Image 1 (tube, rainbow, N blue to C red):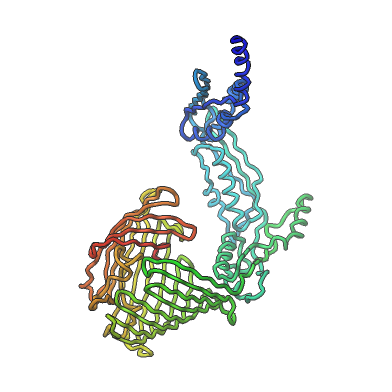
Image 2: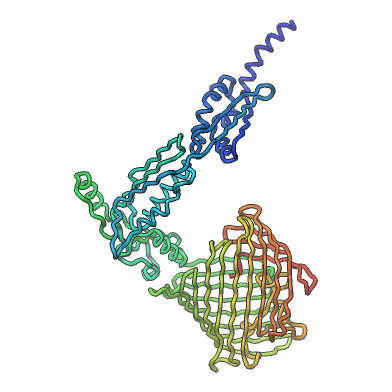
Length: 593
């Protein structure tokens, strides 16, 4: 009986093993680049845990593996590798793969043939610059992915401007394993030159055509450019009038001409070097005219917040945006009206606001009306504004002043950063100059200037140093009569961390009020552990005063967490105020300006 049981077990074990799958391990000994390539693509790795695997199938894959490995490493530029494969069945079956790649194949001669590409003094085309931009030059390692990318990139460089119908008519890479050289040949046909024609607009119902036409930087006769199309589309999306915008060249308008050209080309008829202008087509889906929203939140600067907004995109042809904000230290109601952008690129607006602030023992109540003209690009923004303010101020619970003022202010912002939302390299500068210089609706004449700057300096792919500074000065015969909005304070999330919002300034009894001068600075080191998560160390210093000699900087320092959210960088900091001997939590979204 015992022998019968043992015999049955011997017969069942292979069946059970086959039912459970014949698993094995794979060990690869190769340079890191090739190791990752083989782990991702080699059949021996892919099927090592397959339930249907058995020893016979493994042996078949072992015999096929050397050729597959040579094919794979050839895509990385190695055409003469030494491959050794063994199977160790002593314990858990283990396949050992050793790859010595040898010397890589290098790019030898590169021949780029450009057919067409008509050029004239009025419309030059730089063929040499196009060839110089080739991404796989002689002497570089020939890799299949780099070869495919180089072909795509040179074709993209052509079709994105002037020649959208360009084609890659031939390409060839001849590899000589003995000399380890790859000879490359690429031929491009430009096709006909294309230029923009007249503007066509589809989808407008409620809003005037000027909202679309005035933002158009493309003129009839301009050469085709995808960058110009994308820039125009971005401007239209920023207006807020449209839920969806599509800007394109209307190729369908030339369908008949294209069919006729194809027939003539088949008959050997010479083709023209240019085609009729392409209509510029703008398709829009309008946003709903009215929109309302409510929200709650919290700011480490001004406390708990409740807010409500109401927007109407067509009030007598103007866009209206209004908001009511109720915070612990600040309450505001305002409404602004925006004209459509003019044909010259000006953005004009006007509005009115009521505001109450209770900051460090100083309570201000302000009513204001303002008008503003803004123009420029994200790289250089400029504006000029005129504002009438009527303000009452209470300090230490005593009504101390009532003032009115009519200042005019010019502002400019320069940006040169690698990314407008998540900058890691470059700088941003902002400067303002203005004041109330005429005795018109003004109790105290004054002049005011500010300058702010922030620079990003990468130390490594994962670390960045951020330096920030701010200066401000106000000149007037007397300080009484100058609205508190135009005086200076420091402290808070985007100023000197470690101190309360606008806590630093001129001491007046138990209250803190604004001063004539401001100086602040900051140095921060950021390190990104993951693409979206980082940490920071920082040191801030600054103060506001009524005299340059009284600007005794107060310092704060601490650590923070950083997160790249879809709406911008989120910063959470814990800072210690050296002067107050207290730690404070700070939260902010985005960078200072």
